[in-house]
Image (cartoon, rainbow, N blue to C red):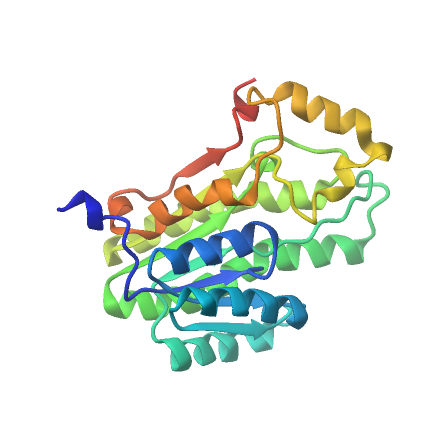
Length: 258
């Protein structure tokens, strides 16, 4: 196989949840730059439209779907709309996430717990089922789940987020086993501490101690940027990873090795 074509996503259709900002935006634009048609899913349609414009400037077909992933009844119609507009989904990236900075189990409300688990875990299960059904018929597909450093470590500050990201690892492995006979690869990426809107509170003066600890523990000595996940995400979406499944790849500047 020609190495120059291994990472070419021309003719592929990619769906990125939470694709209207942060890591999701970078991945969506990265896939489009690699040749894919890209659909983003996000709750904030103003942000959706901004990223849609960026995708369209790249020159491939693109779509923005306004959707709250906790609304289960809207997931299948959304996926159907994407396939009608762009074609069968080849790549699903389960990236969308929310966090409840509750300070611990005793402070976190059941409502906040349910909201985080619904978006961070249940929606991954449900969307993957929908995408995999079509992928199985075509005997090809890539599902990429976004984990976290909290896929490895617990957190007394954000217990629901940590629980969901830990579960993502086992869900990824389970789907990888089930879908491998159908030539569908399922993998996960574990970002380190990345500069996004969601992590902005940690970089404020009020949380200086935690921010200093993160930088001190990270051998790279800094926070990562969303664009620094694109290479790994394109690899996992491409023919280059056709014999890679059930893995969790860290993109963390070395944070997890200490």
